[in-house]
Length: 158
Image (tube, rainbow, N blue to C red; front, side):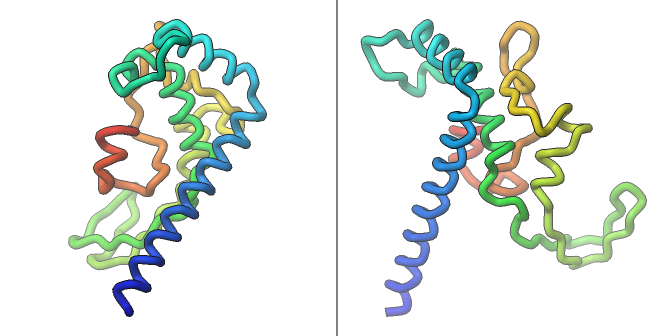
């Protein structure tokens, strides 16, 4: 009974987070018809209208990819991550962090930091592209928290 209850909790929590993230992203996209138009133009140019896009098309859909990254930044489901702990004492920016401290990351402060993202309140997928329209390798955003703990994010989304 306990295993069944835990499985149901995981299932429903997973569907809730997925639907909430999708709804937030669709809401944000609805505010930017110009971005939708550019995505459609890119899809038409790369994929055409005779077939559906595939993973093989992804490297050539740079604006779509940049838009997804920007959506992850502004519509992040988790604004505060789960707790972490350090195994060794460390110092970061002059602050001593004792061994086994509890550390929580505030993703909102990262995703909207003007030093990392100029004009952070402005929705701008181009912040993830260079002048030639190619994807810039960027450390964030962190839609699922910090670290590379999700294989899907590492392999398919990041």
